[in-house]
Length: 67
Image 1: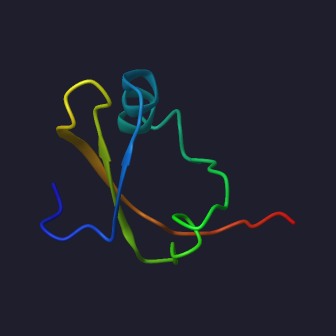
Image 2: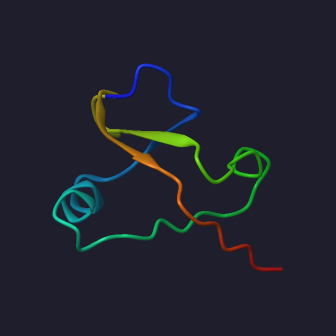
């Protein structure tokens, strides 16, 4: 896991498995105040929602913002 993630979010186990095997390449989130600080190059650490343990880290490569 990344030593210094820029963001830490929860993600369900099915989505984590799909990220790991390459079937999930996009994570869509509401552009609320917490997510507005996300920038290309940031590291997001995803936690297991049941245990709060880190399960995967990703680097943001592109942002799409919808009005």
